[in-house]
Image 1 (cartoon, rainbow, N blue to C red):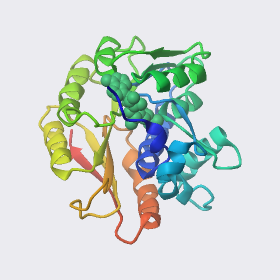
Image 2 (cartoon, rainbow, N blue to C red; image 1 turned 135 degrees about the horizontal axis):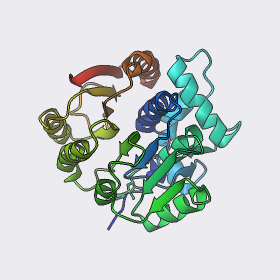
Image 3 (cartoon, rainbow, N blue to C red; image 1 turned 90 degrees about the horizontal axis):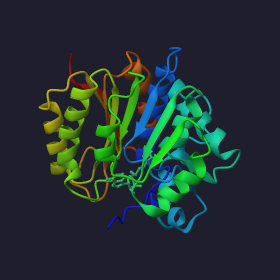
Image 4 (tube, rainbow, N blue to C red; image 1 turned 30 degrees about the vertical axis):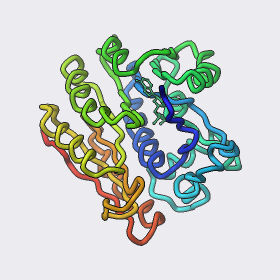
Amino acid sequence: MLSYRHAFHAGNYADVLKHATLVQILRYMTQKDKPLCYLDTHAGAGFYSLNSPEAAKTGEYHQGIELLWQARGLPPALADYQSCVAAACGKHLTAYPGSPWFAQHLLRPFDRLELCELHPADRKQLERTFSSGANVHCYAEDGWHKSIALTPPPERRGVVLIDPSYEIKEDYFKVADHLALLHRKFATGVYAVWYPIADLSRTEVLLRRVRNSGVRRILQLEVGLTSDHTQPGMTGTGMLVVNPPWNLAEVMQPALSWFAARLGEHAYAEVRELVGE
Ligand SMILES: C[S@@+](CC[C@H](N)C(=O)[O-])C[C@H]1O[C@@H](n2cnc3c(N)ncnc32)[C@H](O)[C@@H]1O
């Protein structure tokens, strides 16, 4: 039984890191005039009202998108992300787009989106929002299995977002094996994996397994509210990007440093190579 609903967390600081990074990956990948496939293994609902009871209950977006929503003079990657959110919700911050929305916004008509979502209510909304797009397929299927079937994409150019909720603790173990499996089938794909730091020992296991997976060229981008990860709750969040665009570290470091400075005096941002060539 799936209990996780992204509506409670939409626009939080983890989403800022995840979606700002995704925007820069897609900007880079769409520079080339060749078709691209975007595969979202855990797509969520695709679009979230910030006036919903779920968003009101946690208020997580106050410590996320709201910190930069009206800011001027942002580092270019954050300004780009901010403009995408504004394109989704208009003048007022009453809604927040999910990863499929950012992808559809940035991809071209000849690109394709493959979206997997298991939760019936979120899937319904996902289909309502995206299924009119001729280049979008929504699957009511397990994203772990479906992504294997969909890899490699016929275009031979692809971005895969692996964004589980980690409500099932095996997800921490699954990520590295899954990444290695997809990478064996499609070595030139760009893979973006999101992870939380809520239980440091589990996150360390995930990172160790990824480091030992045999997959190379991995960039790690991390933002934390504090570097003391023994504190309760989600104290940090990260993205791993396999085969990152050459300029990703360069554009994301100032953006994440800016954001960390707004997150609080103990917050940090780090962009580093997890595994080299
Ligand atoms: C963190 S949320 C996704 C957020 C989304 N990628 C975004 O950035 O806007 C994780 C989603 O995965 C869904 N989910 C959980 N297990 C799944 C599975 N095995 N296959 C596909 N979706 C799954 C959950 O219902 C939830 O909506």
